[in-house]
Image 1: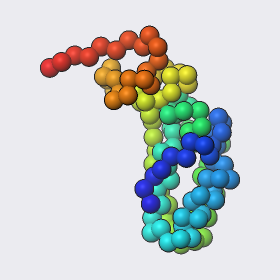
Image 2 (image 1 turned 90 degrees about the horizontal axis):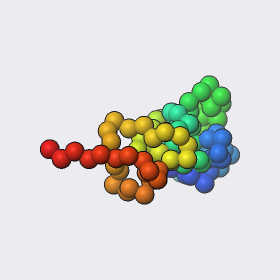
Image 3 (image 1 turned 30 degrees about the vertical axis):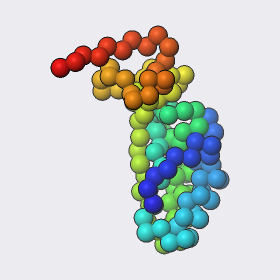
Length: 121
């Protein structure tokens, strides 16, 4: 199962919710051979939005362990997609950090007044 982000499942605290656990459990019970848990932010400011699931401190381990347990109990191996949204991170969560100043395909995610210089080669 490819990772799909469930933005309406996590709260602003970015913790795994019961909805997450049930979602992945159902997929495992219905025969997924391998489950890749959705894009999971590695920093608070690297999230797509406030309801993006996170894993940037040990406080998050218990919830992720519950996902792994329900998947394993149903016979499905599980992996996680670690993620940093880069230029696509929500501007209201802090400074957008990316490997270049080139804007994303959707320039609407940039914060107002965010300086962007594009150099053509």
